[in-house]
Length: 449
Image (cartoon, rainbow, N blue to C red; front, side, top):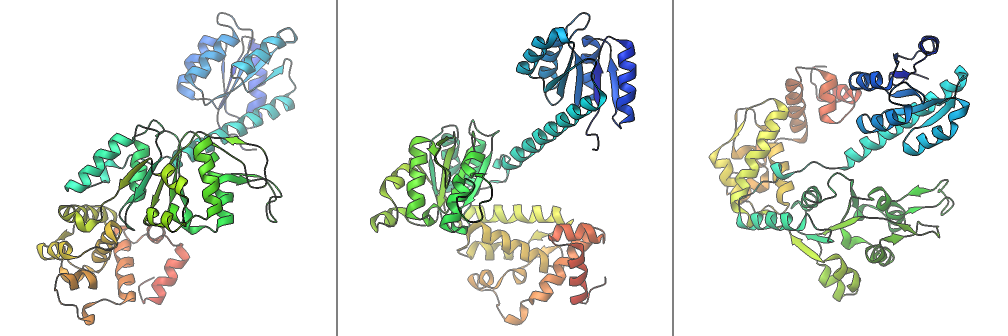
């Protein structure tokens, strides 16, 4: 097995240190040694060991005290205690304090190697779990949540007030208005911000699959359940779960969700044991849940439980001053991505202001990205905007002025290749396709390969 980090061997017996360090190096490990706990604590600051082999009996600071200091200073290291027959009780106590394991001296090399490999495996698992948690924890989006309109500023104020509480929040608004970004900002303002933020798209999953995803399932719960699986409520423990499109869930899932909100407990699909979680629930919908309650399509008790606090994201058409701010922001971000320096002409800005934006902020982002692709000069003009935007502003809409899909694709690929200096691999990564598919595209579009 490939070594996964250096080892620090701490023992006051010079002969043991010399022989054991040599054997471990022969097995492929990088090894440093220390003759005392004080020496070890100094070296830990610089070498950051993956595993520490720590003798219990040391001159000066003993091994148990050294273990406590190691856990405080370098918690990422796994510690294996080296002990004699007379100190086994102390070795067991060291595991309670935080040691991974212990071995009795004189220890066979193969036994010690097995313990080291297990320690390295646990360290790798802890690192992966930490990376997963970091990946589930979104950054604070305040810097990119842009708007000066009264409606938008009112929303920001409510987010600041609601964030630190643990209350359930129902976020309403039209498609593309930014409901998920609001949820992420609420999480970032909460005391749970260092814990996972788990997104569930309720509309994308069939009911049976949604229940399995939310609550997990036990082995044998259904035909393909060959092993048990934790649900997303368990993954979100300590953090926040965001239920997007909550209006799409079935009556059965509504019942189970209400129970979680009321008791913080649930059962996995096919299970009998209660699982308790500490999770804040945020939900979003673009549907009129009150109307659905009147039509008996949504549980009334769940509706009132979900809407403890309700935030409405204003549609972009009511945020007149924000359209220009957002358009300029999107162009700035795209300029950085493509290595360009384009600006928006006054006429194009006026066209953007006139459009009703039924797709809201998401539609504006896509409109600016398309304009950047078809724009050949340094300024985005009304002719570079989509047909609906130009039509709303009374600009010419002849279909002949619109580029074909192939022309759009060709221009976009050319711009990405320019931004990457012609590097095909980097261009493929930016485009979200494989390098092989990029070469196929270049061939199909008649571009230099």
